[in-house]
Length: 69
Image 1 (cartoon, rainbow, N blue to C red):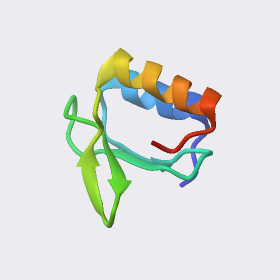
Image 2 (cartoon, rainbow, N blue to C red):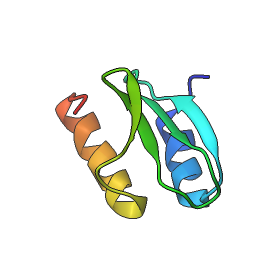
Image 3 (cartoon, rainbow, N blue to C red):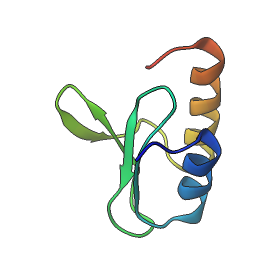
Image 4 (cartoon, rainbow, N blue to C red):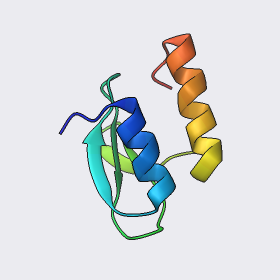
């Protein structure tokens, strides 16, 4: 399911499980309540390098750069 950037940010803040695709095509998911957020990278789901508000900042910076990494 494609989610808007705002929906992804809300899901990250909520702490509840979700699975979605950002508008930049990144697959992101949280599998257990308040667990880490994962993203698809090289044929596997790996924990994002940051979590919580730090992850949201990182996503915003990526959006501004137009970067996928």
